[in-house]
Amino acid sequence: MNQQQADQLIEKYLNGTATPHEQQLVENWYASQSEKRFLSDADDFEHLRAELFEKTLMRANIKSPKRIMRLWPMIAAAASVILVIAVTIHFYKKNQPVLTAGVLHHKTPAREVLPGGNKAILTLANGQQIMLTGAKNGRLANDNDVAIDKTADGQLRYQRGNANSEKVNYNTMTTPRGGQYNVTLADGTKVYLNAESSITYPTDFKGNDRTVRLDGEAYFEVAHNALKPFRVVSNGQTIEVLGTHFNVHSYRDEQLVKTTLLEGSVKIISGSNTAMLKPGQQARLDPSAKQTRINISEVNTEETVAWKNGLFEFNDSSIKEVMQSAARWYDLDVSYADHPSDIKITGSMSRNVNLSGLINLLEFEGAKFRIDGKSIKVLN
Image (tube, rainbow, N blue to C red; front, side, top):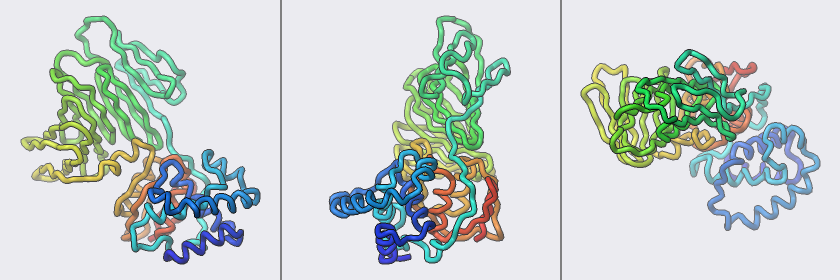
C-alpha cells in the first residue's frame, strides 16, 4: 500500500468507516510504537495532530476500551491515529511501501501471547536455587560473608562484607525464554541479562582478577578499576576491560559472537588473535571457523542495545532473524515452510506489547503465519 492508500486508511479510521479489523490493525500499530516516539518533525504535524486528537476523542466511545486496556495499559484510544504518521516517518524506509496490499483482509488466528518480563533463577555456590521472580524483596542469602539482596525495583545486588576469607564462591544467574534480569556484582559492575542467557560470577572478586562467564546476551557497565581488569569469557573469546560499557551477543545456536562497544575500550582475545575496539565498533567472531578471525565494523549501537532499553529494533533484518528474537522473548516454537522469504524488516517497536502487535507489523510487510498458541509456522 502506498502513501495515498495509507492516507485513505487514516480517513476511514477518523470517519468511522474502517472495518473492525482495520481499526484493530491501526491500534496495534500504534501500540507497538507507544513507548518510543518518532515524531521528530512534530511542528509540521502539530495542526494535524490536534485535529486528529479532537475527532478521535468523539469516536473513542465506540471502541472496545476494555480490550485495548488489557493489551496495552498505557494506550488511550484517542491517540491511536497518530501512529500512521509516526510509522511512516520511522518504521519503514523512504520510498518503500508503508503497508503491504491485501494484508488488511488477513486476520491472525492467535490468542494473546504476553511479552517476557523479569524472570530468573539464581543458583548459589552450595547448589541451592532461588526463583527470583517470586522471591520477596530484601535479603535473599549470605554467601561467604557477601549479602545477596533483591531490590525494590526487582534487581539483584551483591554487597561484600568485612571478612578477609580468600575462599571464592560462584553464583549463576539464568534467565529462561521470556525472561530478563539485572544484577549488580560485588565490585559495582552492572549486568543486564537478556532472555535465555546465563552468567556465572564470583560473589566477591579476590586478588587482581575479575572474571565472569557468559552464555547468551548481556550488557555490561563495568566499574572502573585499573588494578583489576574485568574479563568476560564467552564462546571462544575473552573480553578484557578496565571500565566501560559494552554488549555481548553470544548464543550458542547462532553462528557469530558479537561484541559491541559503547564507551571506553575493550580488548578481544580469541586464540592467538587480538583486537581493540573503539566506541561504535563491533567485533564479530565465528567460533566454529577453522581459521578464527576477529572482524571489526562500525555499527548502530542503539540497535544493538535496543533489547536492554525495552525495544525490538531491526535494520534490514530477515524474517528468520526477527523470529529468532521473538522466540526468545515470547517463548515461541518457530518453524518454517520451505525456505524463509526474503522479506526485510526495518524499524522499532516496544518489547512490552503482546505477540499480536509484532505479528501485525510483520504481516504489514507481507509475512504470513499459521499460529497455534505459542507454536508459529512462517508460511512464506
